[in-house]
Image (tube, rainbow, N blue to C red; front, top):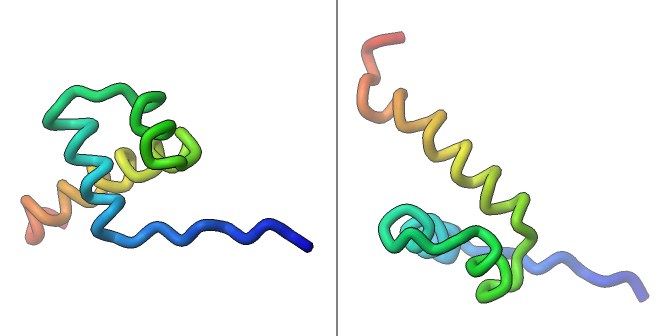
Length: 61
């Protein structure tokens, strides 16, 4: 039987990112604690900062 991927809720993703950015926790610590691949955290962080420009400056495009 194939292992199924664990679905991570949006709320969990926000919690992980907040701990990363506000509490200066390392990605390796968070990936162990929340049992997620470190690449997921890097990808979430990248998406957050890429979309931040659109949120802060919506008319700049």
